[in-house]
Image (cartoon, rainbow, N blue to C red; front, side):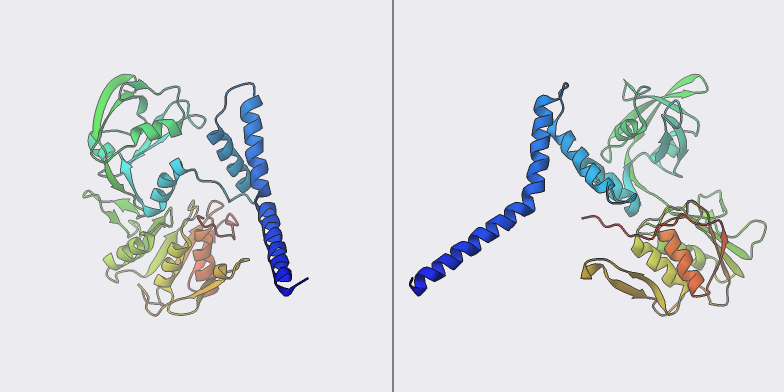
Length: 327
């Protein structure tokens, strides 16, 4: 056999092997697609392939650990809005079945369209734009209340047996992740404890894109008039790792903040504090946590404790030591 023929043979074998391994790589995907096709054709009730695909994706992610999940294309915008701390809507939080029997207003964000329109905690939402929503779940009603900026929505309200119609215009609503001891008459927060004005009180319920800036602004507004800081992270389920790093960096002048480990080289990283702090290192800090303090909250609490920059007060935290990324 000539050298040229051998080269052609080797190239052919290489292509065959490449095709084999490539086919093996995608075989599980073909199996899932085949299963979806069989279910679509054979199940007793009609079912869409899109719903089955989403269920398959969710099942795969849920099998990994309790914290990994599939975010659908429809939900991605709302998911990102939580951490961006901005969304289009009325600025109202509602709860319904199974937590409450009716779609109930829990709170309205200060100066939001819902707040200005007169929605009140305890109001029952029975209609949205003339559509009865009493048989819908909370997510369905929330979608109907949300909408494009500048559009209007008409809510039918039951307030202690009285039927009201409230109209509001949707806007971009900025969500605070940091609150103080009490709200002043002008809507701003007072970050000094009423019973002990020399102590700053800062509560954060989320680590979002603006959390570190909000905490920094709160402490700077006190203009050095404090002897101690309470950082309340109770019921803070976490958020962005970068936000937790930025919060730690507000209080540390040097040293390791956090390290991450993973299978891929890109996930192995160590982050150190930068020079400069928002308050002097002589000002003591107490971090409050409970069993619902998780993820980024635990990063902040552990970091400040390890550097002897804060004492931890409260209950054992949730115990989540993993980091999720959107891929």
